[in-house]
Every structure is written in C-alpha cells, then in structure tokens.
Image (cartoon, rainbow, N blue to C red; front, side):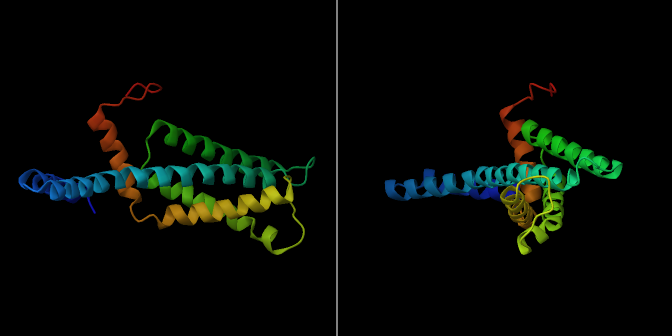
Length: 180
C-alpha cells in the first residue's frame, strides 16, 4: 500500500471516529487508525533488525573465509576482505544515519545471501575450512542466509525506505553527524 493510500485510510478512520456518537465505535475506529499508523514503524524496525544481523553475519563470514590459510594469505584474499569490510562499513553508516532505501536493503540482502552461500559447505560437511571457530562460521552461514532472504522477501522495502525519509522530514529530524 502506498503512503497516500495509507494516509487516506487513516484519515477516513479518524473522520469516522469523530463522526460517530457511539463511544465504543469511536474507540474501535481510533484503535484501527493506530494499528495502521504503527504498521510502518514495525516494518522499518524489522528491516533494520534483519540488516544489523546480516551485517554481523557478513563480517564474520568474510573474516572466516578471507583469513583462511594464514599466514600465507594472498593479496586477492586481502582485497576481497577489504571490499567486504568497506561494504559493511558503508551499510552500517547508512543504517545509523537513517538513509536507507530500496537499494540499501537489496544490497545488504544480496551480499548476505552471497556470503552465506559461500559457507553452505560448512553446514554439509564435518569439517570447516575457515579462520573462525566452526560453530561461529556455521551460525554466520545461517544468519546470512536467513536475513538475506528476509530482506529480499520484504515486498515493502521501497516503502520502508521512503517512509523513513518522510518520517524524518515530517518530524524535522536532522542528522547530527552530516548536518542535513
């Protein structure tokens, strides 16, 4: 549902609450409007939680696979590890500053699935070829896959990002770090 449709439904429910003489009906309309209004904030909280868990899983997975073979780690492994680390920092900054949108949710979900898919053999075999402990690597695999799929399945990802920007605009919230 788009923002305009949701706002129209909330406004209609509030008008109905004001227009009725029955106190129980008015209370029911107000409760329905409240549920509808809080649904967006719940969606945003779920997406942020999934993103934070996915970023932690991505970091653990990248460290486990990137540092495998120490002390003879190749330059390509270090470059790959640095790229994934830069992505985690970028995505974390976007989450902390509240500048999320469809691209941010999609990128985090895609990278989480990618890193989780690289670790699927750790779930299937008895041995783990990673620089992190086996239980941590397996947990990172499951977390990456689950959170990545959850973020990509979030049909309202564009609406979530748009609503967070609209919320900041309506409440006149400015970012103290970047001063806008």
